[in-house]
Length: 170
Ligand code: S3P
Image (cartoon, rainbow, N blue to C red; front, side, top):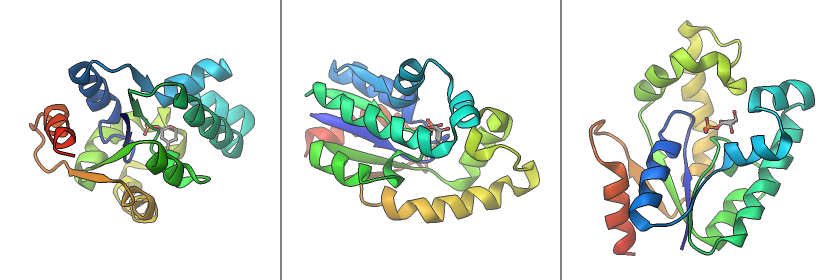
């Protein structure tokens, strides 16, 4: 089974994906890491030097390259489902899981990391919450096409364990 974790920046895709992969004894792929390795640059550098549209092309190609693994957990970038036909492709190739996270949690997590995230660059702390709300509203159209939606209302929940159980019931 190929499992794609999707959701906004700061929703814990990498953290949860790593743990879910351990539980299932599957390999784990972090798509952003794969992109950085392929490009030989970190993500802010790719955006700066080549622009977002180039980044989105590399992201699409890296996503497609995960097909070599029949059993795998892949944590996507926040924008991955929203470009090209990536969401349709993921739904064809495996199980997509949306980590639906309250805006207040995203704001708290993203506030200190703003400068390392090209999509949030230049957004003041006062405007961060409304920016995230708007972006999430745009992106929800894609995120909500996921086969499973996990609402992260309880900050202490063991998400990986809950997802493993839900997957077993599929
Ligand atoms: C992006 C999210 C990032 C990374 C890039 C663009 C986005 O991934 O792919 O900075 O458009 O939301 P994370 O969600 O893993 O931070």
